[in-house]
Length: 167
Length: 271
Image (cartoon, rainbow over the protein chains, first blue to last red):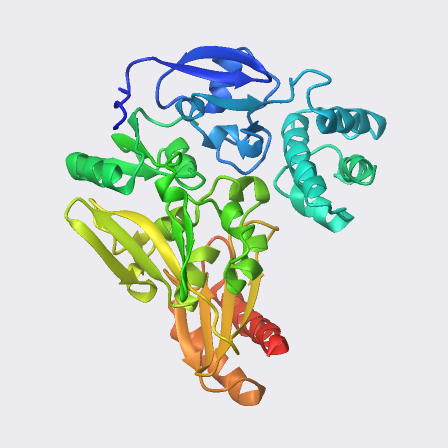
């Protein structure tokens, strides 16, 4: 069965599960997921930085997998699960632990990069745990290399992720 | 930065995508992982009329292990191949250098080949291993060897109505060993220079990325010593390298001589 062509001028309905809740919104094909989340669904926890995949601020989880929302179209997540930093407490134990550790270690200052870092770290740590691996600091720094933070110098972020990784 | 307007359609199979490409011609682009194409669209370096999204095709998401090759479908992500038990050993060495894990989660193997950035690792590995690109159009299918596929800066032998439906990497044969070395300004950036080395019963094969407009591979007669230094120097000067905003041609040639030795030593340690 072939799919319909979605016209460039028209608005198309996108259904998704956002942080465990069924949501829907309207999008032209060119609308980025980052803008769809913020402007159409009002989920402004996901931040927009460079808009070409380098800074990592807009990282969300699509069907559990960390990905750049600025390099994804809203129409591509139709029918899929999207998780953002706004995921409610109690839904993702790892994310809860990361949020608490970031607070304890002062792992954020302005907070612009934090949402993306939390989503990446949650996906990455979940995979490490599933594989029964305990990451070392070098591996954590490698994972964080996909994110730019201009406040912290990364040290408290590394410490927070390491604390959860070694818990 | 927002992309210009385009129409969007999903395709579930190579056949569907090929028939859409035939109908819409040069204005259509294949969207797989989007990790190169979406950035290009956001910066409006390209303004296609139609995006054909193959990212949810299960047919194109297969990794098929054959006796002599691993065939990677167009929708297979770099992360999926990296985690696969039959990941070609040279690729296992190269994957950690490819951008970041968040990008490899969505970026596809075939997409990187199609984009043909001269600094990218996957085109380099495909050329080093003498892999094959499988192209499909409504007119039929054809296979192009890696060294004929890359024709210049971001340019390939793919015709406007063709899609890459898969790429094949030969499986290692006993006695073959591999090395990979790269230098970039920051981890995950495009390589200023990357080198793959393959040592087999036939001798030493070296492939270079980041120097010139496409990956370049050649066989070298010596494995070590002053003779190898001389050959690497000749190789460095044989490539069309220019100064550019990222670094000077002299630095790139220096990196080639240095990284090639590293990659060759890594391969030799396994033999």
